[in-house]
Amino acid sequence: MSRQLDCQRAWNDDPVIIHDWFKFFRSVRDKYSIKHSKFIHNFDEKGVMLGLAASARVIVSGKNSRERSKNRTVLQPGSRELVSVIETIGADGSFLPPFLIWKGQQHQEAWYQITEQDERLRGYTYATSTNGWTDDSLGLHYIEHYDKYTQHLVEDAEGNVQSYRMLLMDNHSSHLTWQFIQYALSRKIVLVALPPHSTHKLQPLDVGCFGPLEHYYGVEVDNFCRYGHAGVNKEYFMKLYPVARAKAFTRKTICSWKATGLLPYNPTAVLKTLPRAEASAGLETDHSIANTTCRTPKTPRTVEDLESLRNQIAESTTERTDERRE
Image (cartoon, rainbow, N blue to C red; front, top):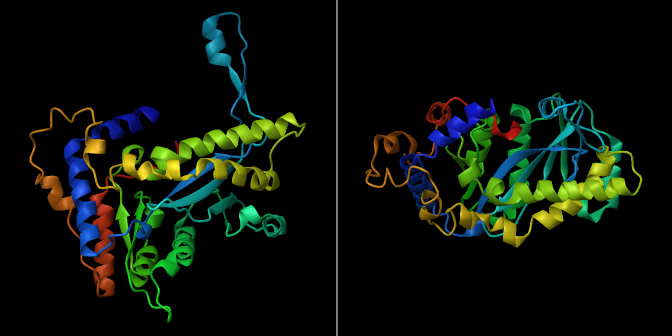
């Protein structure tokens, strides 16, 4: 599976595809007059193992090196249960409260008791699903969560939306539902999907935030277990995660927007890192790909137009591979 993903990512490092997508990104900003960085956000889902430590212990059994390599076991100090965290960062260095998804069917009163007692958890939103990941219903709940915490940027005194917001995302199916798109359109939220398998280059959260977040959370788990705790459950996670998040989500890491070439707008920041950039330097930017992936979308006026837009978005992406679960 990982080899297949590596091949797909390599193919989507094609400078023509990336360059044409940058043109599309700029055309959308121009069309909807999204000039200020405070109106542009990126969101993505990250799976966090509750008991993931920074210094996992490795136990090796076997008499020779070949057996040791085959039989090694990694021990983590606690639960291997995953919680999905949807994070959202702004191009101006801001970030929204996270949207947490627990595996299960019922909300626990303890989650809300801890939230009320801890100022760092203010604004945290909790949801559940059978597998602990986003589904179509939770996708809609997320876009409502995003709207709730950014509407003050665009509404007038009467609550009317005056300006457009841009929301960058991957092409997961839960972001392409009719309800998700309809809600976004009704609230002047312009959805922009990244090219498939390109998040390691173009998504600010992947480029500068999730790595430090995973590191600092692992450090917190290490420190927690050194004080004699046997492991990390959901309640302890809610105490450790905000600490790690505060260390990881700084203006320095959120400035990963610059590394992606999105803001300030600088496609060269990414294009120069692509392995085939030199070979493709002479290609025209009005390649046929631009005719399919770089069209500025028209605002739907009817249900039929909305469904057509949904189909266009779905067709413009290749067969989806859920990168969040690598």
